[in-house]
Image (tube, rainbow, N blue to C red):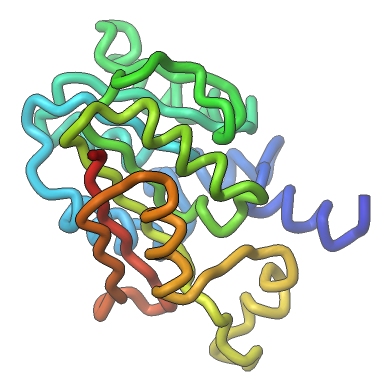
Length: 216
C-alpha cells in the first residue's frame, strides 16, 4: 500500500490504535470541526422523534449520541474500523446495553440489515471515501423504508486549490471522491430516490455539501 494510503487510513479513512483514540476517543468524539457538520446534517434531517436511524460511517459515535438524544426510537451504526467501532460502543455504552443502539462492523456497499429497516439514514464525513458510491446508495435505498429519508454531509467537488487555508487538500485530496451538485443529484436519482435536494453549508469552515432525498 502506498505511503499516502497508509497515512490517510491511519488519520481518517480507517483510524486505529492510538490515533483513533486521540482523535475519536476524547470529549468531542470526533475531529475538531465535525460537530458543525453534525449540526448541519441534523438540521437537514429534521425531527427524529420516533425514527429508526442508521448512520453509515459512524466513527466515534458522537452523531449517534445526538440522534438518540433527539428521541429517535432506535439507532444503528456501521463502520469498517474495529478500533473506531469499539470507541463508538464505549461512548454509547448505555444505549447499547439497553438495546437502543446496534453497532456492526462491515462494508457500506453491503449493509448487514434487512429491507426497510430504517426510516432515516445519515452519513457525515464518510461519502467522500466511498469507492463504490452507486452501490452504497442502492443499499441505502434498500434498507430505508418507503417515505424515509437519507441525508449526506460530504465534501463537494471540485476540490479547492491547495493553499495554506486549504492544506487538507494536499494531505487527503488525492484519495477523496467528490462530486459537484449535479453529479450528486444524478447519483441519487439513479438509485431511485425522490425529492433530491443538494445544497451547500454557509456555516461550516470547510466546503460542505448537504444532500437530502426521500425513498420512493
